[in-house]
Length: 565
Image (cartoon, rainbow, N blue to C red; front, side, top):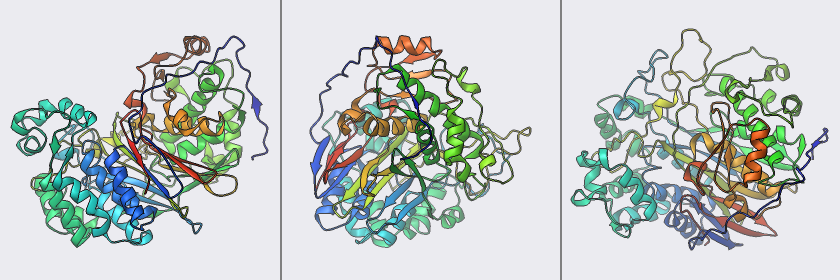
């Protein structure tokens, strides 16, 4: 436990804490086991991972199996043409992160801006998913690619029943998909939106997966699939771009919260943002509050604003920019940022909350930038834990739903549209850390996370999709469990909110009591409410370990599933 002073939060005496709704849960969304656990955005992907655990594989083997399977059963959010980031906590004590973010094509320069088409070939980056999953398996797994990819190949070749979530995504895409002969041949048989329960067969994708399973990642980056990607993008992603790509093993971000160790992703993703927000919150005692207590909501929202303000100028691709991690993650810096939080008033307007100066805690030259980040909801989370204590947290994405909307003919997968996640070049701001550069990774907010308890054992494996909502949702889930003592189910089911400096308002999911909303407004927050269990607020797939029992929860907001061997 950190020793610095904590300011105690007073509850509003008239506040009545109400229970959130008892939503009906689908079978498989909650599982318990002592033998291992997999939680993903789709029951069949979780089953694929559990199948590998049952066959004697470790958590990494199961994670790779589930990650390939999710590209089959959730193709709108994950794809061979996508990317991701993985955090591992291994039973032998090693903590590792694998960066398989996409990279800009080699012809891009910092003067290229985001006026290119929002979708299509000129929105794409070089995909990293296949390289990252293959690297994880080679370095930390125990099985072959052919073994762990078998469930995904089977799902693609034999088909699976279309669920309501994917049916909705296809329906939403009908306008553009119906005029694309390649995509419509798979997803719109006879030109119609298929009904839920229809068996969706993806033979081209099965062939691509099988090719990779037999030839390894070289089939994707140096073989016929690489050539097909170059042809599909009309050279925007060149064959040489594909050959050059490599996933990278990086050191994860380590921090502490209430005596628990937080293992997160290094820049250019949002692990540092989650860690900084929790570091700031460690200066406050939240234990007397709760998920709907307005003072707790206020303090957490303010901490998230401050952490996101620091993300803008200081977090970029580590291969291109020095990130002041020591300063951003120091207890002293967090305490200084915490002093900016007024328990009686919100920092407004939200989008004018200033960044701090972590270089005061890390003596290196200062770099300042800015951010323009569009909404990119199409992401997925996988959480895996085996009985030996190996844990894996993965967030992977193709950026927008269906990515660039460009399917690779003959191979059945969409390419990402990650290029729009770079910032427009501004000649008045030459120090921006997120402008276009050749082979640079664009910044993102994904934050797969692992939490160890004070005894050093894996306690939580957690993460979520949700674009700009991701850091808030991850932080809230951790706080719900550690500070408010919730079960994992309750921690995920309770309404969520999103607070960040690029939004002008505090965005809250439906279900907060009116008294809470009124109190937040009185503190100066501009309150904006949404419906209940909205997928925009994330799709947490997580595992919690208590007394040796693993509880896995698949996303309630996106119809996920959990499975045990």
